[in-house]
Image (cartoon, rainbow, N blue to C red):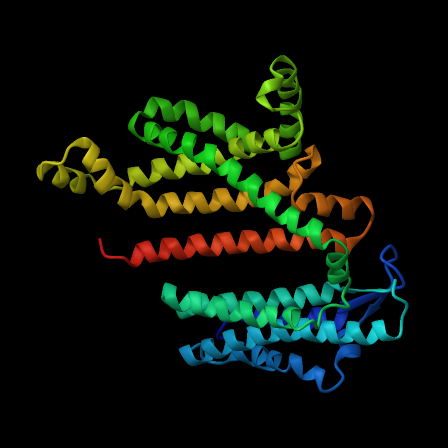
Length: 380
């Protein structure tokens, strides 16, 4: 009998990927697709033992999902994810020793499916364990260290994505900083406009009936189309007042577009958080002699904060992703590396920009989820 259907589905997907999809790809240079390398070709001892934790993940769906089984599943999943990285790096080094310097070894589709299945199995196990926020932080930190170990040990240096990084080390660091600047620059006006607008929409329903439809329409506009719509008016504004330092391309339109996209989750969650404050609590605060300002700051804000942070989480994750698209209008950031790879037909260069964006979004999402969990557990 299957005790954990999620883990069973992930195990089936992993077995299918290991059997039918390439684990790695080897090409004579970065522009050619090369030949696929199955997982079986990389499983020579002793490095093949890296996939041994996968045996537990195949058996775990049929075991009773107690806390011991779940903890072992999380450990096995993280060890498998780290082991797959080390195994790929070792086989890439073996291939590089027999090939020209221009040769490239890339992660195959099978690797990505196996890695995703292992990480999702770990996340499912953590969720089912119901750990406290501090324990989640400890587990996350331990998992991050294990996953980073092959990279820090230099075992992945012969993989194509690391070769692309070595060729663009300085540009990559600047791109990461620029990406963070774009997101932070959009977050400031979003909060300055969105929080008061959410409070006003909650207190005056007529304002909400106007604001929410407008923001919903903005959300339906594709990001590239919105950048294009801003190009003409901002170019005209730059021509009329060049001293403003705003143009139709670059950081300015990127920040404006991201701000417009980010307003809806902030405004909606501020209004929803304030709506969720129980009326008897407000009445009790007023009965204690609190002024309306004190009721808002000492009662409404603390009780609405978890819902607001959930909106902030959505906003930041969305902004991290959309900031990559802003590279099309000259804003820079990690999106510039991604589009360079697309234009050069270099998949690993695309991944060099895309993987940090994913990791940054996951880190922001996890941090704010933990913040919401901590607030939910804190005494009233």
